[in-house]
Amino acid sequence: MDKKKIVILTGAGISAESGLATFRSDNGLWANHKVEDVATIEGWHKNQKLVLDFYNQRRRELKTTYPNDAHKLLVDLEKKYDVTVITQNVDDLHERAGSTKIIHLHGELTKASDEYKHQVNDIGYEDINIGDKINDTQSRPWIVWFGEAVPEMENAITEVEKADIFIVIGTSLNVYPAASLLHYVKNEAEVILIDINQVRVNRPYKFINKKASEGVKELVDELMNIY
Image 1 (cartoon, rainbow, N blue to C red):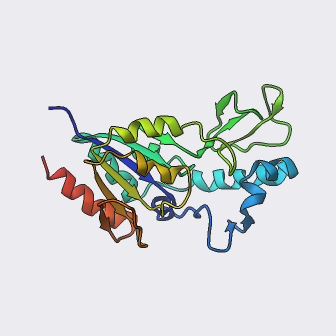
Image 2: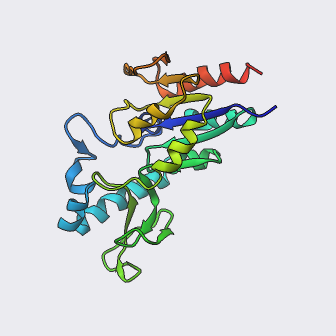
Image 3: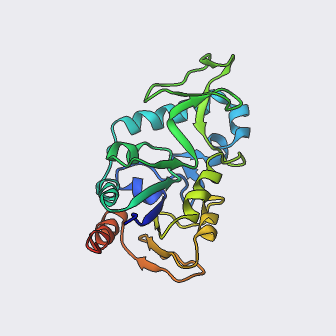
């Protein structure tokens, strides 16, 4: 029998339990920086050193951060289901936990590209410095900043359209285009939301009002016992 298809959309709430700062707080700051200064192409053109220093620090923090129970428990689902993780997070915690099919909508901290994103290199947790070049242009973080195209969106839509179960963990579904993925879930698919804050969508869904690690454990226990 073919495995059922599970597609999981994760946001900042799943990585917050590992100690990583959430992308945007209520006061519009990310790690004490204005979002427009460090997460837009305009900010990059205005002050490349500030942007590089900011992401270098995020990369150093990531090096000493580890997957939490929510990341690890999702891997267990691969024993009985065809699982794809679509994440809005730029960390590598899903990879390090052991998930095998991951789509990063907003880029990856551990990669760098040329100015025009034509070439992408793995850099691990190393710094990017002024003067580092890829394709004769200043190397930049492989991050999708506000206002930039989301190159993995089409791949994500393709996966979501095949989902029998669509799970959303740790995201308010307020950030587009990621939030629009819900529109591509087929009508007969089950939708499950896990968050410590209330999340509502315009279709039938199951809501688990718990933090990621607790909610994922509850759900994985249930799904693993179905077969």
